[in-house]
Structure formats: structure tokens, C-alpha cells
Image (cartoon, rainbow, N blue to C red):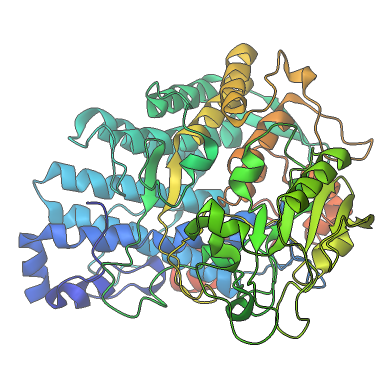
Length: 614
């Protein structure tokens, strides 16, 4: 099943919209109807609806990437409610997250219920249910654990403590892995034993941190490890998910839009433009519109547009994370932006000029296009950049300004982002060698159309107007190289430093970064204050930032490892003390608040069950 169906037969639509509901909106469906009979005979029709329900989670950004060290909102007074730790239980985004993840779990329970004797179909539902609980527990901690298909108005589900919930989820994974008929691998968006092992590794790692470590100082990010058994279990699960796969595929090829479903993908949310039955301009997702700057009118310039005015841009730390030779910079960000050869009137030829020319034009065709921006990796020297610029001029590349009234990128430039500053060359209108200037990073990133840290991982070269939901790239949620880093983190906390470093070097070797002989050899390429003392865990988190940038894992990473406060104090533009991340009673907001709607509707949860800090 390369692509999942978009529509379920009309006979069952009412059932799937009600019986497979979420915790916040239980319905009384005790009387069986034609839909119930139909799905008892055709449980496979529930399957695509269940898989499609993961899309909301796969493309959600606010609660997964914000409140960390990698993303900022340069065009706003602050970085958003979640980054400012001012979210409340009434927040609509929190409610939507809880509701949509719960909906996916309910769909999984629906499939399990109707699968009957089809154990493998039920195993797919069980995997998706476990996946849903991973996403819930990492945001909210203890949550109700519902494994039944709710057909009544039952609304009494108490929160299950993590010390009980984590073992149940891991036991579920173990049973699916050992006793189901799921395929060993699947690269087309369905459950597999490899996917089960991967989510088990992530759950075991979270459980090890939450249950077997004790925080000693939030500001310093220090902790003690009380047991290593769960960390060892996480490493074992990660190794099972890796399946001996070596990281030989180039990083850029792994994320190429022409290489979906590759050997490193373990589980992805699926999209299909050709199979979409409605208006394709709004049936996809908008991830390619995010993690970018504002470039002006995208139709005129042919550069990608953004709905959010440039939010979720890379922070100064993120822009300087990549070391000399690390190919992940150019595999993560667009480094060459073309513009339309016209300089007055008319629009760019979409797809063949501007941004998409990188994908849709031959090298010879690209040479005939004006250069809008060129972004060099942060470790590039000024001499190297200037030599490249001179070579482009010698090769007849067009470097000039554009009509100020027509194009978003009015002053084409080249730039190196280094530390707190950016070295920038604004191309001369006559195509001669430009002079350079140094500008603060904060100024550079605020300028409209002047920030090239534009993520390419979700680019869809077939999109016609990227200001709408026209992105039909599949969205990986589990992949092999992340499992290397899950194993590295687990080995490190289990006291097996050698194995941890080996996994890290495996990832760095593929990236072209220098291999390390020890954790202490690592020198972070970004600027920190003297109070920020590097520890081995920081290398793991830096590798995760480089390898998994813009994959919506960062909040989980910092919360799990107890570094959320420490990293915000060091890298946030607005968090200056622990109290900024706490309530008036001094309770740190490690989790998001349980939605007030859940407290109001669930008779087994009261305000006293609310997470600390709210």
C-alpha cells in the first residue's frame, strides 16, 4: 500500500466520525446499525482512515518544535506562546493536539475491535495505538489509557501513572514484535516489526529518563541515574530497529523528493497527489511553507511563499550547528536560490524559474537564471566564498539587482552565517565582484527576503502554488539514522560510552563530519556563555539537532533529557531565569497542560490532576 485511500465507503463514514471518536467527545453508539455490520465484515476499510489520522501529528509544529533552542520567530515580538511558557489549559492548540492524537488512538481501537480474528490487521491497530500514546505521554505525562472501542457514553478514564503506563506500552510492543505476522519492514506507510521496534526504543528511552533518573538542578540540567536497565532495553530495541542497516546513503539523497520510501524510512505519513479526489491545491500539507523566511510575492519571484510570515526560522545556534565538511547543512537547507530572468512586469515561470529551478531545471538551464541568493555552510571561510563568487562571475553567472517593485529578492546576495554575525556580499548591478559587510545575525534574519536558511526536507517540486496546502511529500516519523542516535543516547546513559560514541561516529561519518576519538574531543561550533559547560549528552543532542532538524522532535528531546530549562536559559531570547518557565508557586512547566476540555468532560479527572506549573 504505497498510498493510503482518502475516502472510506459512505456506508461507514458515520461510524468512523462517531464511534471512532476522541476522548473529548464520546458518543452513545450502543445500538448496532448497518455501519456496524458492514465494518464487522470489512474491517480493512477502517485501516486507511486510521493511518491517515497520523497526518495531523506528522505536520504539527508548535507543540513539537517550540520551547527549545533551534527555532525563533524573527518577525514577532516573541517566539510564541509555547516558547514563552505562557500556554494555559484553555489553549486551543493544546486541545487540538490532545483531541487529534486521541482520535488516532480511537481509530486504532476501532480497527482492533472490528479486526476480529485477523490478528495482523489488529496488530497494525495496536502499533498505531502505541504510537499515539508515545505522542501523548511526551507532551502531557500521565494520560488515560483506553484500549477498548468506546461504543457507549462512558467518560470515566483516570490518568494512568507513567510507571504503570510505560511498561504496558512496552509489553504491547514486545507482543506485537514477537507474535504478529507483520512484515519485517515496510517503506510505504504501514506498520512493520521494524516500526514496532523503533517506537519501542523511543518509549523505553523516555521511560528510562522519566522513571530511572532524578533531577538535581534544573538550571544546570544535572541529574542522577538510579537504574540503567531501561536504558539498556532502549538500546536493544534501537538495535532491532536498525536491523544492521549501514548509513551509506548520502544524506541529501535520503531526503530527496525523488527518493520517497527509501531503505532508511521506517514509518511515514503518506500523501498522494495523483490519488487525491478533490482540489489538489488544498489536499496536501504545508510543511514546505514552514521553516522558511518571507520572500515577497511567490508568484512574481518564483520563490517559495509562506503562510506564517517567516515563523519557525532557525535560531542563531541552529544556523551555526554544522561543522566543517558536514554535508547535512546542504542536505537540510537550500543553498542556491534562483530568480526570474525578467526584471520588470510579468511573473516568473513557476517550477522552471526561482526556487523550484533547483529541482526542475538542468544544470545548463540553471546557469541562464539570475542568482537570487547563495548561502554558504557556516564553516566556509571568507576567502573560500570570495573565490567561489569570482568563479561564478568568470563562468558568466548573472549577479544583479532586480526591479524593486516586482520581486521579493530585490538585492541578490551571498552570505556566510558565522557565530553572532553574517558576512554578506550584495551583488553589484553590473556583475562585478561585490564588497562584503558584516551584519548581526538578528538583523540579517529579520530582513524580508534576506534569509536563506530554508528547509528543503519537505520540498515538493510538483507544487504549483506553495502558499496553499500543495505539498504531497510523505512525512517520515521514524527512520534509521535517528535510531542510531536513540541507541547512542541509551548506551551513554547505560554507562557504555564506547558503544555510544561508535553510533555517533557512524552518523557523523555519513555526514562528512570529523569522527571523534572521545566525547571530550567535541568542540561545539556555536557560541555559548561561560556558564554553559559541555557534557557528553550535549554532543548527542547536537547530533540529533543536525540529523533531525525540522523533524519536530526537539521539545521531546529537551524535556526527556531534563535539559529543557538549561537550554532555554542558554539559547532562548526571552527566558532569563527558571521562574520564567515556572508558575507563581515555583513549579517548572516540564509538560503541557492537560486541556481544560478534557478535565471538564472526563469524570475521572479533576483540576487537582492538572500538570505541575498550571
